[in-house]
Length: 390
Image (cartoon, rainbow, N blue to C red):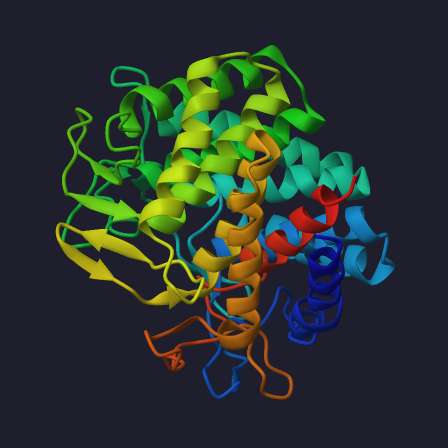
């Protein structure tokens, strides 16, 4: 695995981070909003709240791990854009979108977006020790708990307008549904709070993480099938037979990070982490080593998506750390070989492709936009760099 560590370190520092640093908008702040499949940059494209936070997390974490001053400078640039343009001083919270100049564009507030704010600001504080970042992370934490948590059903709400009036969950629903509760929001609130707890280890944050682990185990995870439910109504009834393989293996290691962060001892949670990993290994790995996307009913979506491959490597390596089963190392190495062959963009000045089809042909989708950033592939590299041969 030392070879993998060396290769992903090079991938991070020589391809992924330089690609995004080269897209820094020095005039208006943030990073340019859209880079299409042909690598053409739209300097007037809108900039996403989620993606800005994801960029901030990446560069803050990269500095913390490598000590490269260029990364903290980029993180500082992103922090100021997030704080001054993406954050709503009047009503609180992060906007869904701002325009290329940083003016509010889509002012809806989503708990998912706020969670990435907490995640990024907490990581930026870890790297920079900027007290203003931690203060804003706390502010978003209290906002999520005040506006976004429904105590009656023990679930995090999803979508609101600018003034925090609850709205239908248009932005995080798919498959023709409007879901009141999503697995996706819950795993990323967990991710955010885990990082917040590392810099602000209060009983209140610990209790919220403990409750999220309970929700995931009792409401979202199916102990019979070993899959996580995806979309639910307001009474926690599942809305669709959908299996999201990438989210499941991502959730496996994010849950484990939370367990370790707060030091909780619960064999049922440990079993959930391991069982999810074995389940995805058995049902979603293709012969070429890649991980397929999802299954709706009996219909498989075998598209190979960039973030699914990246998160699977971390998930399987985490499972190896838990079990010492060499199978998980083999799966991680197979995924990395597939990424190198099919997902990494071999064009000059390219980064990673969004997705490829069954034959490995690229789908002509954006290389960067409000949903595609440096977060999943950058984080995979950073996790392997920190985990291997400690």
